[in-house]
Length: 499
Ligand code: NOJ
Image (cartoon, rainbow, N blue to C red):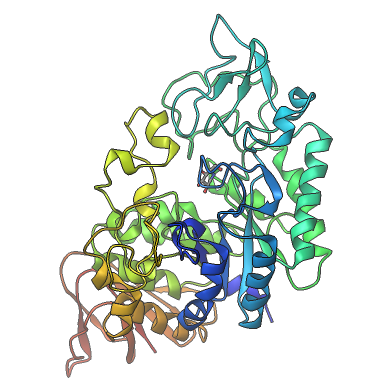
């Protein structure tokens, strides 16, 4: 039998926005714990929990002060243990975030006498920063040292100094943090900026402004040195019982470079961002699926997360989003869902400036409005203004007044809701097996099968007739009856599963 993670569906809980148990307007561990039955009913296999560690929250908790403790806003270590125990009792795995590229500038190391050995400090050049590197959040990747006339590197916010992974003390500390959480019983780690830990020797200039941090070949990403780290971590993961896994959040300029992160002695999986980025076009989607399957390791699929525009908005309609989801869930491999996509939540595009919290907004001087629009708290009930996300508090980001209809409560009552579709799909998916085989299909349509399942997806904006490949078991939109001659009209932007 293949290990659990090779075909798992993992649900990403963005902790601050999932469920608030104590009324401060911010989601917390007890909130997640109280909603475990919901996740169990939804039919997922596990949860990826975003950072809950002690943090000043300048980057939503990806700026960590203490990797071994829970921030009071999220609860306590005892709350974490209780969540883990309850999740395991329901057969739900828990994957936590490990953030090795940087810490918060409030981390004790950044205030210790040898901070220059643990972080990356360099003398400036011509009165400016040491080189031309740009922060992923906008602006220069360097800030003046608080205690000298040199500069320190931060690929993200200025409050997130990059660690110096050439220092063995840094590597040992992270191996220890990893063991600390594995000892507590977590089922795996999602590794933040897994491609960032090592920088090219000499920290050479990139040579141009407007660096594309996702796809360019850059001296601060995807350097070969990172792979020794993952080899070491793999040994640690394998030394624990129960198939603990490492999942890379890695961006690499080519599929081949990305595949290196999931070699048999490195991490188990890497998020499939090329799939997420694929445009809504049959040939482009087919090509990215083929490339992903050819990469050889355990394939993963993802359409949304807390860093990108929600796929309902990105793809352009609720119909496309639902079709894309069914297409994804039929593929071999494991899938990562982002909280709220099962409700069909759209990106919130009209947040007022004063509500925005993502550092990207200020660091880009407002040019990039940031990622808050996909991080709006979940609507559980129909009661505005907090829709059951929080009993008393004001949600940390305002929730649109018309989200009652999208709430879990409202969707649980309807059999034609997005939530019902996800539940049904996740139940059916458990029986899928086998490799993918493509079949001939009219332009704009993709048809593949895996043993007894056939998946037909019409990417075009017109209804297209095909020969029905079996009996329909699930469709992302109402399907007209099969005609006497065996043909069926697949509505535009619709995915249908057949058996
Ligand atoms: C990737 C995380 O997903 C994102 O939310 C965060 O801002 C950066 N890494 C920096 O840690």
